Length: 208
Ligand SMILES: C[S@@+](CC[C@H](N)C(=O)[O-])C[C@H]1O[C@@H](n2cnc3c(N)ncnc32)[C@H](O)[C@@H]1O
Image 1 (cartoon, rainbow, N blue to C red):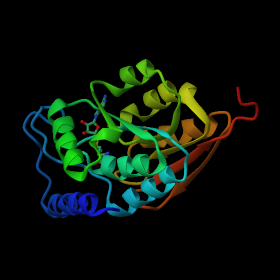
Image 2 (tube, rainbow, N blue to C red):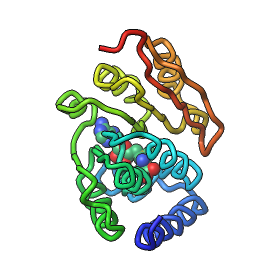
Image 3 (cartoon, rainbow, N blue to C red):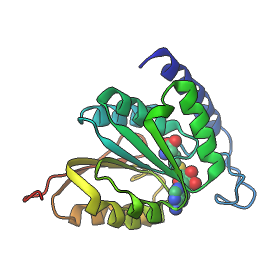
């Protein structure tokens, strides 16, 4: 990690500590009311693991579902830069995506990131490229619809990581665990890293 990236990660870590130590407060209008400042960020352990996995691929096209305020994207974009790849990150709310872009610029990583704003389930279908790495971390009821949208776009050898598989408990995450393991060509394991991550690899028997 270079100094600019480390500096930005440290800013995020301070904000993560603050958010996790404060009592939960429902944002005005709820989670999609346009004033939710919670990051719901993965922690540094999950971030480091994402970085290691994505760096192990050659020139990967990385897709992130759920940019939020940009924390996980820093780990993924750093891996994209190191491996000659790029990151496409999708977020429903423009105010979150704008903050993520500012932080990426500060980290010197914005040139490796394509920020997209809108509904990920719809936008995945519009992606022209095949995918080598997918990080799934949006609202949990969207995990399976997103899987159905990105699965046909996976390159052989693609790695998939889904967050919040153990905490908070959700039917959406459970359904994703069942659905991903039922897909042809998928090997998958649930790891107790952070809030629990499902790490999967796509290796079709007869690659096209
Ligand atoms: C758990 S947070 C992502 C945290 C982020 N990956 C991180 O670790 O820094 C989930 C994000 O998904 C976004 N989201 C929810 N529904 C979405 C949708 N349909 N399309 C794109 N993003 C969505 C939410 O606005 C929220 O910012």
